[in-house]
Image 1 (cartoon, helix red, strand yellow):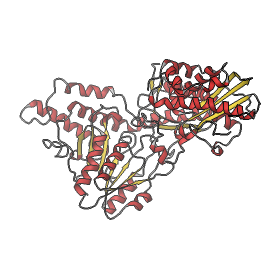
Image 2 (cartoon, helix red, strand yellow):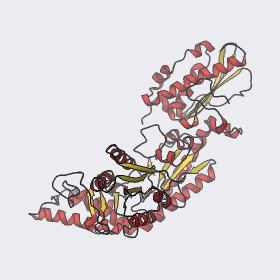
Image 3 (cartoon, rainbow over the protein chains, first blue to last red):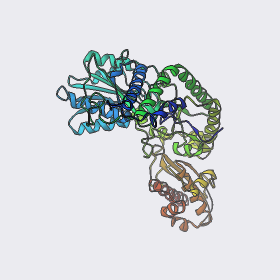
Length: 411
Length: 128
């Protein structure tokens, strides 16, 4: 078995070889600019782009004309939220989102707050879910947009998107969902789910990095956006710039594969994930699942190993590539904002690891992970003063902990 | 994050892991840090006369925290209490090549040494 083993499929995925194969001609012989109308090089590139657009639309139940290509989800999120805010500012200046969104949403909302918009950040349940009631309670006459994750990138919790979408449509508020983690893992249908704007990213679904798209509803209601990148009016005026044709082709192929393999992938990853969790729980005590076991992505397992610090655990399983929290925030020493918003104590948040299972994960790799995770946790608990105290019957919550105060903590 | 070879060595082969009976009169115990901050160090010393004859630690924390406390036990063994009080966190930073974000680990290790000595001295009824 080749080491290290990749268990961080929420951060990114390897390119599916079938995707790579589809992309290759568009780097070399079919190099045309999809916007060139005067020769066959351009026509062929345009044809390839339109085929891809159709495949993406098909995966999410949209019409091809509703797909706007971008560089990925971060750009799509910026375009959706800023584009709506700018277009509908006269109608209202209030946006509803949640505390467990990706930083791309949170930072974009903060930017808009500086421009005078008001943002409500909903606090999710302990399982990381935003409920219909929470959204309903936050809507105001001047609310123009509800922006919520479909599936959380850290804990994999699925929001009740269909109910929230239906509510937004009844109230005449636009509904944007960041479906970056959900697409290809769970069924997504923008019609049945009442979604007005949706983003997805190629590299999360075995496609290339640097390409993604924004779905923008064209009727019932017709969503209008102010472009955030100007310069030629590509993509129906919503996103200028020469299209990344090989990337777009790859995204299209990746979506096609997700559509044909959705059930198979979900079954494969969830059975590996469930087996992993079952065996880890059998071997170790004081392990907690973060998230919602009932409404969870099939490929996600976010576990807290009490009394073991996450970074030291990652160091102890060096041939298993995982992350604590999201990769975008792992440079900081702060515990994850998602776990914090869910009310997971900082102590458990420091002990959390996210495992991701993918299309190419094997049973053998999971066996290796179980063995090494269990071994590392046991070793670090032998080293842990907290585990020792708990074994002695000490209630950790009763201790007057102090940081950097010599002699102050009495046990 | 890349760890220095010395941090990795202490992480893989921590020195002096374990516990003494903290109720014994010749044992001093220091517990510093907090679980919600992601670091807790317990450092214990066994003293004969004014000399630290043995030391043990247990640490909940990142690799650098484990290495800092492991190194601290190594350094204080055989030292007098006064000599051990002289150990500065900057020496730990230097020895382990800790990056700036990990300096707090060395501060905690210095605090743990001082806290253990203080505990021992207060048990003896001496000044601290």
